[in-house]
Image 1: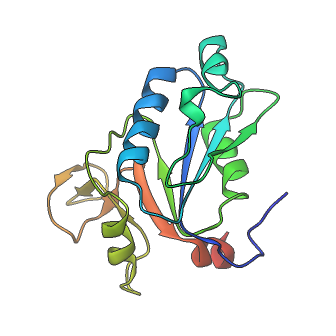
Image 2: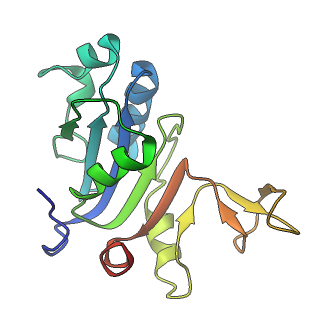
Length: 168
């Protein structure tokens, strides 16, 4: 069931998809364990995962150890969904005021959440992320180190939960 109509109960929700890359998921979860701020919820959508990934998501697995003092929430799909459908299922469980869509290729080496919340304090910012892109024509993109960018790569993309509720 969706919790989106309830008040936020966490500062952050980090949403991860688990399908075929168990080592990548474990590395991302390890980074979150090392660096996530208190009040971080982790939601893992087990998107009809491979047998190797399924084994790593078994009860008692080290991959499911606490993150920021809270057990990751695990959602299982009965069939492999497309990425958007799987993310939409996970978004229904987001309790954090800031929601982060995280690809398991993201490797955290420090606090990657507080800067996102700071960027989203600006009411003119719709999304924030770790990897910005600039484009002269919105067809060809290059990495940008600046803060005013034309697009954000989806591997570490944050937005306000209130915007999710208002805009869908």
